[in-house]
Image 1 (spheres, one colour):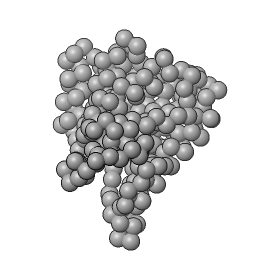
Image 2 (cartoon, one colour):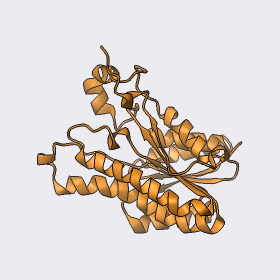
Image 3 (cartoon, rainbow, N blue to C red):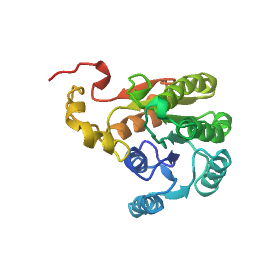
Image 4 (cartoon, rainbow, N blue to C red):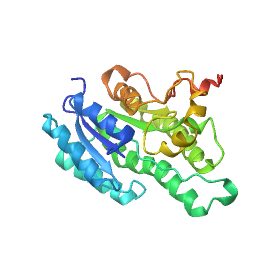
Length: 252
């Protein structure tokens, strides 16, 4: 097990990509803290599943946009499992609408969750990682940061900022052995993308050279690599995982 006894914290960890990441980390021996906002039953069921398989896990509630709660959650994890070695900032939200109809509240909610939540949890773990001269931070971004769609000014802005934040933070933490990277998924079969996939799934697949949507496990495998020892000389990178979507090779 490559991550035996490491402590991992996964925000948005109860469903979709976060769930697959939490399962993968536990499978490699990590002790996993599953952070959820509203999916209490799903988070506790996942923690129970990991424990039943001989692992260590706990589920904690938090709105990642709340700085004080993020700090408190990290303190709870440290008391229960130990200092955080691996942080996966996966929690995110969308609120799509054309810009002229977008309300300030919708803009702020998406930015505060997707970007603010990433800042909050990074800020809560960074000093400890620096002091221990070790740590892995993986931020979940999106291809929407660079390949934009109408109605996603807030979402694209938040993910573009996450990419820049990832690179900047990587420079600051690199000399102390802490790596900071991001993964940028394309269309993945999750609850968040369900509405778009159900509405235009066949059309979207024409723009994906691999002709299929990704699975949460496709993302989790790359996150596990970035969380493990084999990625120790990789930092400040945004790794795109989209089946070739961003290559722009549309065909009929």
